Image 1 (spheres, rainbow, N blue to C red):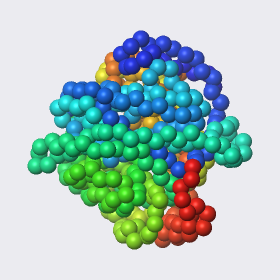
Image 2 (cartoon, helix red, strand yellow):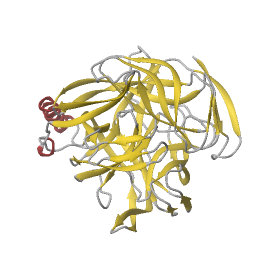
Image 3 (spheres, rainbow, N blue to C red):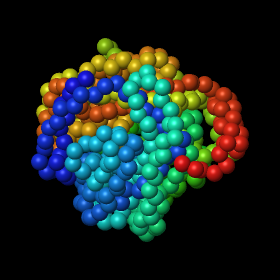
Image 4 (tube, rainbow, N blue to C red):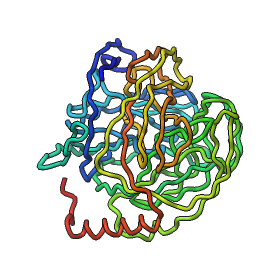
Length: 434
């Protein structure tokens, strides 16, 4: 496939250049470990509620054969990081990368201070190949560089912003590829307006120790997208139990969120799990799905038993190609028509963590109709958040999604899978040796 791609020659705001690419369908196999790296602000950056801010960060160099995802759960008291930006020409997976900036969404006015922790990225080590090719890791050695940095955690106490300096280490953990699916359910009724980023109180989601969360990649509510979730109180590490109290929601139109509405969904992945006590609490959930049809916005009451999936370590990329020309304005969310994508049964998607269009970020894809994981899915549109004034051109790349094959099962089967994984780990890999 031939396509056009534009990019900033250096930092956002520099000169824009264009390249033409010819890409073939390809897959990747993930190594059984992932590295987490902190994103630390390089200088003070004033931010204004709801307006995307480009925050310069202490540069991160990544070796070849890596890809990136943002660690969800907001890490700054003023807002959240939704994507990172490479310096200069976009790299291929097989090339080295330099991350220089991040897209930050403020929930209130303030200043992101130099040395503030604004987010965390997950670095995946992968081997790539054409679709259909036998894909193993073989004897491939991955270059893993660990660093120690000094940064400041930020959180709110009694309405006041607190900053505390910490030594921050890169963390390496094993991947398990087993996850629970958690609906994000509003615990209040609230009016919303298009483009006004809103913090919505949600029914508490308790995350067990040794878990990370990832959005599902599909817009889960007719009125907008869940950009991130927020812990109660001081941010905790993934090794600790956390409680999620709020969602950061970006409306794509005016409307009202009712108490009990599903805003979206999270995949809760287990990492380096050692016991099963924390995952036996699955409960039936009651909520209202909110979706659009020819009759307008429809609300349907649902009762769902807890369930999850096991994900294949082999996945593939799908390019999101614009199917229209459109002018965009910084901070004004829009819906972009895409060249149609058909996704097979038993697949999930997640967004690519590096911004791939110079003027904005794809937040979610939009299905032609709401579908279950087990059903075929058709994607024709995407939620696009512009960071600069500009234009989108038909036929150019606006974003990338990762597509994973999964096996969906009840929570009892998940526990059985986890038990098998723990037993296998104890026999074959008593220490993490990437």
